[in-house]
Amino acid sequence: MEIEQQLISYIAPGAPATRRPASGYLSFLRPEIGFTPKWYRAALGIDFGREWHTDPVNRRQSRIDMYQELNNRFPGTPIGRMGETGLDILTGTYGASAIALIFGIPVRYDNEQWPTSEHRYLSDDELDNLTPPDLDQNAFFLSLMEQVDWIGEHEGKVVGFMNWQGVLNNAQQLRGQDIFTDMYMAPERTKHLLDCVCTTMIEAAKKLQQKQQFYDDAISFFTVSNCLVNMVDPDLYEKFLLPFDQKIADSFDVIGIHNCAWSASPYLDHYAKIPGVAYLDMGIDSDLEKTRTLFHDTRRAIMYTPMDLANKSHIEIRSDLEYIAKDYGPCDIVAADIESGTSDSKVQDFIELCDQISGKFQ
Image 1 (cartoon, rainbow, N blue to C red):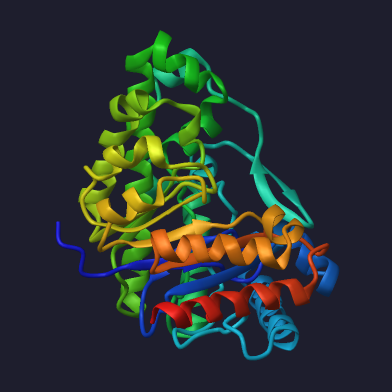
Image 2 (image 1 turned 180 degrees about the horizontal axis):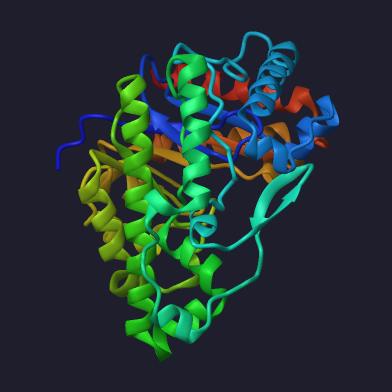
C-alpha cells in the first residue's frame, strides 16, 4: 500500500503519548515532549481522578490551564502549542483502559496518574464464551460517545484521539499474565481472545472516527501500541499477533506502530509485512539503519526515556541525538513521561540540541 499520509508523535497535556497526522514543516529531529499527570498536579493541583475522565467540562478547563502553564514555562518552543486544529478535549480520556472498560474490566482512578485496569481476569470458560460486545448497547461506550457529542456541540469539532492500545496489550488486561502461557498451552483460545479484542478495537475506532467526520474531516488511521511485544519472541508474534496487526492495517488508511523504548529489531522483518505503516517508534538500542532502510517512507521515532533525559549529561545526550540523526533521521524524538524532578532548563536544552543537530542535516 502506498503511504500518502505520515503520522507523527503527539502528546496532549496530561495525556499519554499517541500519534496524529503530520502536517506542515517537520524538522529533521522533531522533539515531542510530554509530562506525567503527577507533573501537572505538582504544578497546577489538577485532580486526574474519575471526574477528569468522565466530565469533558472538567477536562476542558484543566487542559486550557495546562496549555497556559506550558507556554509560560517553555516560551518559543513547540511545547504547549494548541495548534491550528483546535482545543483537544478527547486525548487521554481513560488512559490506556478504554477497550478493557468496554469488556467490563473496571479501572482504578488516581489523582496524579492515568487510570489502570483492575486485575479481574477472565477465566477459561469466560474466554471460551467471549464475544465482541455490542457497542450500540455497551454502557461504557455509549457514555464515551456522549462525551464526544458534547465536545462536538461545544467546540464545533472533535479534536483528539482515543488510545485503543494494541491487541496484545488489551488481551493482557483481560487475561493477565496467563496470555503468555496460553499461546503455548491453549493456542485456539488465545486466537479467539485476540480476535474478539481486535474486532472491538476496529469497531470502536471506526465509530469514533465517524463521529469526528460528522463534525469535521478526519483521516482514517489507527495506532497499534505494542508495548508488550518484547514479552513474546518473533515467531510467536508472527503466529499470533501479526495477522491482527495486518487486519487493523487493512481496515484503515494508514497505521502507526508504537513499541515504547524497547528494541524493535527482532520484529522489523515482520512489521515490514504490514501495509501502510505511516509511523514506527522504538528504543535507541534498535537496529536504526535497518529500520530506515525497511521503512524509508515511514515517519520514524525514537522513544527517549525520561531516565536518560534526567540522568545523562549534556554531552551524552548530544551524542545520542547525533547518532540517531545519522543512522535514523529524519525522525521524531519522543521524550514522554517527564517527572517534576527533571528541571525545565534540561527540557529546554534537549529541544535546543534537537534544533542544532537538525540544522546540520537540513
